[in-house]
Amino acid sequence: MAKRDFKKKPLYRSVNTRTHGVDHGYGSDYRYQRNTKREAKSPDTSVHSKHRHGRDYKPLFKFLISKVGQDWDDVFSEAVERLDTQEPIFWIVSLDAGDAKDLVRYGESSFFSGLFVDAEGILQKTDPTLTAETMEPLCHCCTHTFDGEVFGITKTLEDFKREWAQR
Image (cartoon, rainbow, N blue to C red; front, side, top):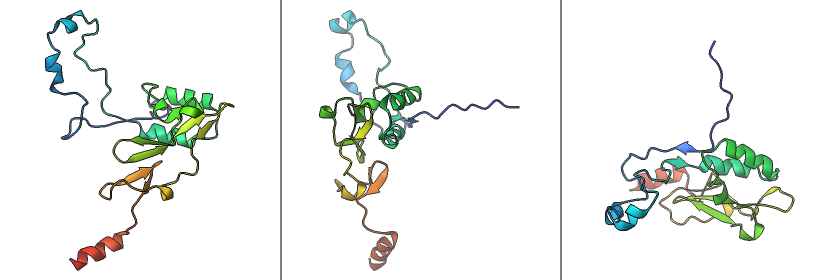
């Protein structure tokens, strides 16, 4: 009988970075640094980038938002177990309420509630009044999401069909 793995899924997704149009965050500027005295003296001259390509942390952000109102230490320890690095946690969570952001933009059109840890060690939303209904899209060509919920689309499929038939 096959052995079952009851390990929880990671809180990130791997994204195909070899497709056309994917920005890798580096370019031809390296040719100006290559074979220079500064680079020869540098101890960390690796041909491998330290940037992690192809990671989508939206599952992490949804996980953190679902844990609002719970003990931060428990939430943090579970998140760390399911991640490759701790850094993305602090893109959305602030340990100090004064530094917390109301809204965090991730990518071109995904927005998430800013989170902070209160004095009692409980994870809280920075602005609990923000909802998808209160959000305005930046443009009408993209699909915008807030905490995983689509916002800014006021037309239904039937409206689009009617407009298309009138052309």
